[in-house]
Length: 112
Image (cartoon, rainbow, N blue to C red; front, side, top):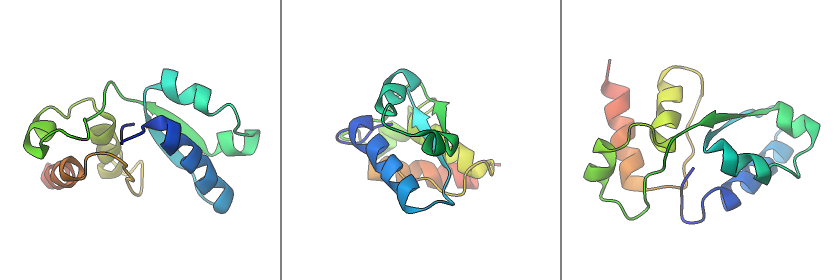
């Protein structure tokens, strides 16, 4: 779970999204040791509608897309995109490297 400010911004935003839509369920992809403490303010109902999916690393925001794509295995972005491909998620929302997201998404979508 990368982005300019990482989970310290995206986890509270995820909780706001859950509050705004009672039908929404979320998969938070990243380091559970970082994400879990940020869920301390989540109530039982919110926690019941989210799941943490572990990922080993993140793609740096300043990484060149071509390099980021080659080194993307195990990153939160790659894991999230693979969840969409597998049908375990309906969409992927990322605050990370846009070029890497676009390129990795295209490659994963085309892979058999």
